[in-house]
Image (cartoon, rainbow, N blue to C red; front, side, top):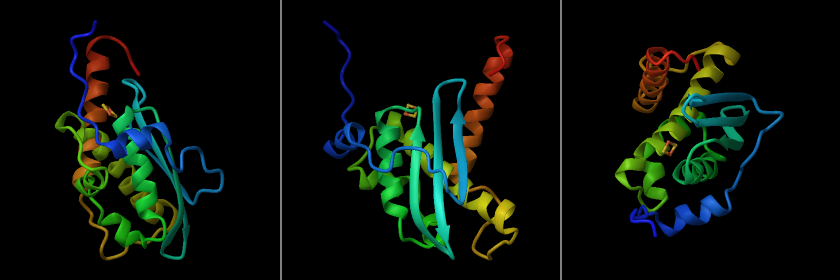
Length: 165
Ligand code: FES
């Protein structure tokens, strides 16, 4: 019998893990972004469909854990109908709270989901609209920075041990 203690997941996390909403590729997305590294397996892809300044639809694909799937699922629900600025202002803590809390070891799962969202919004303005609203900061948000640090760490580890992802 296993001696491992199960993580204290909220009922909401377990429900969304079993029945995630908005799961799957969106073929007509306005913008797509990724966060995480395929090398370690934790990767999230965020799809946004945008009309004017509003997110009218959103979906995700995840190769992360139960907490990541639940965080991405609830995030895609939270941002539907929001303006890009309102979606940008969401934090990983907002998502964790909406899930009924996350075990500390799983904070990064929510950070990855929100990092993917913020990358998508930044990419939409920089690469597709080619404009910069005054509310979009030049510096990376904490979620984008954390996602980038994780990706760089994994790349360094793979290089060090002789395997390139
Ligand atoms: Fe890495 Fe959840 S996505 S532990």
